Each structure stands twice: as C-alpha cells, then as structure tokens.
Amino acid sequence: MIYNKTIIFSFLIGLVGTIGSAQTITSKVVDKKTNQPIPFATIQISENDGVITNEEGRFTIHMGQANASADSIYISSMGYEKIGIAVQPAIDSIIYIQPKAIELKSVYLSNKNYTIDEIMDKVEERLAQNYHFDMTQKRLFFRQSEFNTMKKLDVEFKKSTIEELNEEFIDSVITIIPRKSEYYIETLCDYYGSVEKRKINIIKAAELYDKNNSGSMEAMSEKLEKIFKDNVKPDSYLKIKSGLFGTKVQVDSILEQSEEAKAAKDEINDKKEEKSEFLKYRRMAIEGLFKNMFFQEDPTVNFISKSGRYEFELIDYTYMDDSSVYIINFSPKRREDFKGTIYVNTEDFAIMRVDYTNVKNLRNFRLLGLSYQENLYKGTTIFTKGQDNKYTVKYLEKIKGNLFGVDRPLKVIEKNKHVKGKRKQNELSLEIDAGIGNVSKYEIVVFDSKSLTETDYNGSIENKSIRPEYLSRYNPEFWKGYNIIEPNAAIKQFTVAPESE
Image (cartoon, rainbow, N blue to C red; front, side, top):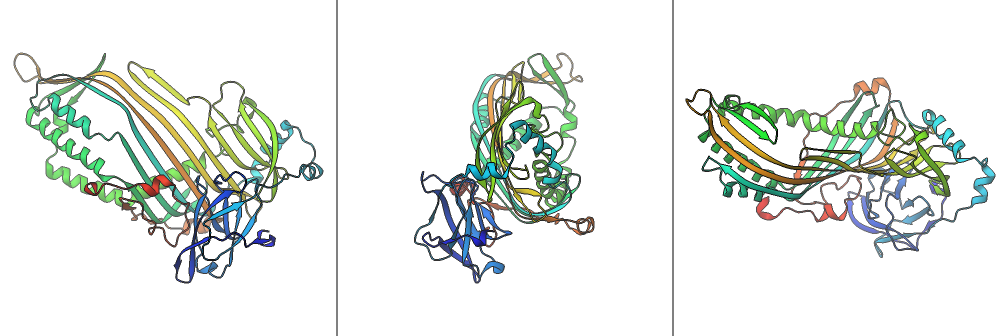
C-alpha cells in the first residue's frame, strides 16, 4: 500500500491556487540521475484519486473537498522508487525521484524460470481473467489533437473561359489555404458500458482552434458559388475530368435549392449537430480506442492475436506499481507491422504496459497521380489493477499519421445540350501537384473505473445537448477544479491572432 511508504519531506511542491478549502498543485517529475522528465508517472492523493504526468513530466492535481485534508501526495513510475511528498507552499516546483534497484534474486525465488514461449502462452491463457470484458463505468478525460500540414501545393493555371475564374483568382484561393493548422478538443465524461454497447455523459468540453482558417475558406466558397451561378446555365451539366477519368454533375441539382430552402436546411442541420453529433462522435472515438486493445477481437496491433508471427525476447526485469515485471521486446518475423515492448507481471502474467510503433507503412497506395500512405501508428497503454484483481486502462496514447498526394491535371467543362452548335460552353483547366500530411493524437486518462450492472447501465443518461466551449487560446482557468492530463507546451502556447478571433 502506498500509505506505508516513508514520506519524503525534502521535496516540496508548489501551491498555485485554492478551490474553496482545497488546493491545486502543479509540478514536474524528473529523474534524479539524468535530470530528464518522467512521462506517465502516477500522482495519487488516495487509492482511487489521482492524475498522470504528460510527456513533459508535468502535472496539475486538484485536491477536491473529499481530499481537502490530505497532507501528502504520492508519486510512482515504472522503474522508480515510490515516494510521498508533503503538500506545502512551494520552494521548488520540481520533484526528483530515484531509479529503483532491481533485485533479480527475489524475482527468481518467487517464480519458476519460465522460457519466453511459456511466458507468452500464460499471457494469452489469462487474458479473460486479467482484463475487463464486462460492463464498467469510467470517469475519464479524453484529448484529441489534430495537426495538418500542407507539404506541397503547386497549381498551374492552364485555361479558363470564365473571366472571373482567372489565374489571379486561383492564386488567391491558394493563398488562403492554411499551410499548417492545429485543432484540440478536450472532453471530461463518464463512460458507461462494454465493447458491445456504450453511453457517455459529458461533464465539460472545450475545443481550441483558429476559426479564421475555416472562415476564410467559407468566404471564398461563397465567392466561388456566386461566380458559378452568374456564369453557368442552370440546364447545363459539368464534365469533370482528371487524366483519363471523368464524371458528370447536373448543374440543376446544384442550383435547385433557393437561398431560403438552403438556410432552413442549414438551420436544421446546425440544431441536429448541436444536440447529438458532438456527443455521438466523442462516443465513437472513445469506443474505437477501447475496442482496438490488444486483448480485444481483431486488433490493429496484433502481437497477441497473431503471436506466431512475432519474435519475443525477454530482455530485463523492472518494477511497476510494486509488482515485478518482465520486460519483453516483440518484433515481426515476416510481414507484420509492429514492434514494441510489453511489461508483464511476473505473478499473474498480465500485460501492465505496452509501447508499440509501426515498422512500415500500414497502407501504401499509388495510382495515376494519386497517393496515400498510413505512415505512422504508435502508442502507449498503461493498465492498473483494481480491487477485483482485473486490469483496466489507466492511460492510453495513440498517434496516427498519413500522407495524401495528388499530381494530376484537372478540367471542369460546362456542356449544354439545349444550345445549338457546340455543346461546350465554358472550361477551366489546371495542373495540380499537392501533398498533405495529417497527424492525429489521442490521449485518455481514466481516473476511476468500477463494475456496472445492466440496471445501472439502462438508467444512465447521455446529455445530448452539450456542446464544447470554443477557446481561441489556452485558458488554465477552464479546467480549474477538475483533474485532467496536463496540456503540453504546444497547447499552452497556442493562441489565435487578435484579428482572427
């Protein structure tokens, strides 16, 4: 138990605010020997209340009313001594922790000297008893970060018979397309259910991005629509060609709606999105992350479900949550996609942590000037053991990246069968060479998890009307009073230029 540990008073952490009679503590956890920050360290006030450090080793923890009288917090991380820290006004905002010596003799004395094949067989045999497959209720914080980069954008103007669709206009469209964009969305919620069925109740949410990027594109879209309406006959159709391929689009179907009808439709869609779409997509995103765990059916990272296709190597031992663990590397034998490291409890053979990364592109498509690569898929998942001796997610991070490219000619030709003579009325011809990169980062930290009955699940409610609050810059006050995973430096430094707000 963490309360039997000696409390080390020599390290003091910062008191940066109060919530009623409760305190808010912000600090950074650092390796005493290397002076390097320690990511994913656990910070606990009590057995079921705490946070985890971010990739920079930083954390903020709010000691709510239930823990207002607590005089210490406890810090632990894989391979380090667990320590207790007195909650007192700041002298030093950095907490140093000491690497823990590995006592190999105790590991061998308490366990049979298993081969790596025997260890992995036991890992697979005990999946059902080590992990939750039934319904649970989790209080969790979910952060999704999106980064888009226009790596290349060359558009060569060839021809246009519409005066306003000239080279200058095309250049202006290219100019407003953002070369880089960032988008962050943060959600604190209760997650109910299992793989088969699930609900979420969102407590609070925020989204952080530059509205000016989307606003500029909308304004340009409206301008393009006006040019289109002023110059193209309603009974025409468009022939869109790229290289050898083409398709027809009836202009009437594009212009058939009046402005009033369009406005009414937009209003309906906006209301629907406000009431249900945000919650729906947050639920789907969280579900997808939990559903793709290595112990679930047909996961992407398949070193367990297709273990015969991987090589496993026992390389060392360490300690995690006071348990001795095997450190095991895995790598593909032939054509599989991932390599990584798993940390397996020497007593119950549960995987307590997995780090993985792809060794090759997961998808690689190239045909007739179009290309698509899924070039990045890596992550870390850390589990904690509950009172029922089953393991649940404590922290999950997944990073996915892809590249999309197009190097093709593009022609848009207006034709009209009711016009005598040549059916072709107008033409726009371009040569496009573009490349776009996207990186998506997902983080989940689970603060509490408990079993859920069917009755309680049926009685749980989703607040479908909730919407995220828009932030144009990072605001540390937004999450005051709530425990989340501390934002990294990039999020804290994000701000929208005053003229863009």
